[in-house]
Image: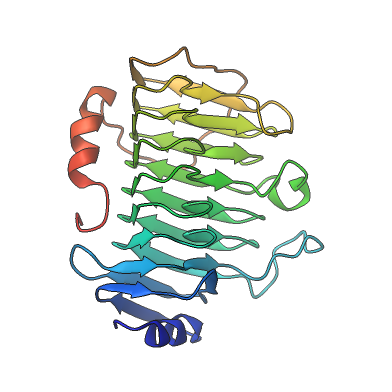
Length: 273
């Protein structure tokens, strides 16, 4: 499909559906709700959205502190280019689960490129290329522990953070969050931030030109936990680490950090499936 009306009707339908986006679609801003069991995939090398973003989840409600029966689940966002979004490009919220954000390009917009908030969990963010400043936030705020504590289990792997500013990611409360085999190039503020008792395992990443690779404070809330293993640092500052992180509950293959720049630049982003 290649029109906004077709696309918005498709993501609102109930039941499983594969939605193929052909070309760049101008969406009205700011955000558009995606229902459960949807695969949204771009065709070719330059399909996606301008103007608006995708919300995977029910409407935000601070009074809901346990997963509702109708929470959104099983959503794939893949091979899409997002540009000039009016709020977030992709936002996952309100206890949504089993979401895969993969092989997308985030050019630039207003707020987050791919945020995960409000009790959502079992989210994988992989093989994306972002040049956007405020990149990927996990956790709505330092005051949102009622929804986020014990949840926000997220994996970030093989992403290319290319001249971004911050939130690569910034995690509150989630533990464990796994950040591995990502490439950080010329990040102006900080790479990974852990606050509000979050626990992040950061391993096998390559940091080039990152003045603050890891940060354990900032933005309010308590200090977070961060464990670093087998990372490479080039022309970068001294990383801050501390505390402990819960075990990662899956098996995975970790590439050596020195191989990450070539591997990730060759494979990350839309059009590189």
